[in-house]
Length: 126
Image (cartoon, rainbow, N blue to C red; front, side, top):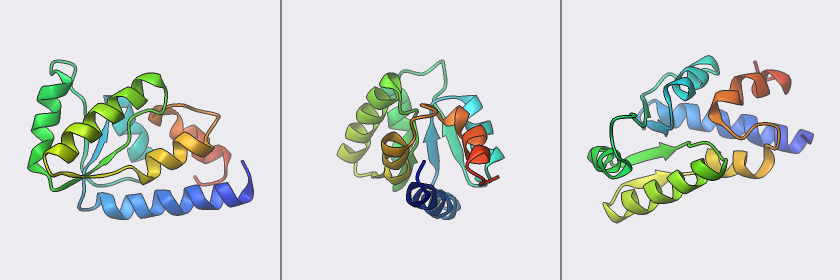
């Protein structure tokens, strides 16, 4: 990763941590929650429960005015992001995808949230 991309990623992670104080982050699984806690996220983090459909889960998120979507950036994660974003926007929920888009663009070493702690350690963040 170039120095510019490293700095951009660290800046975006810091900004997202600040936002997470008042805005929930939505992730795919329980291990993603653990991974984000390891890199210092302290706000509400919600994962997709195994016993709910994506529609039921989406509906449960409409109580928020804004959410940060941080699904994995593999094929499944991209599909989930698209579905959730479309539904939430149609319900008037603002969707923040800045960190997800950046990771999707510059991070070729991992394609999932679960791998972020090791990756952040490798680039000298942790």
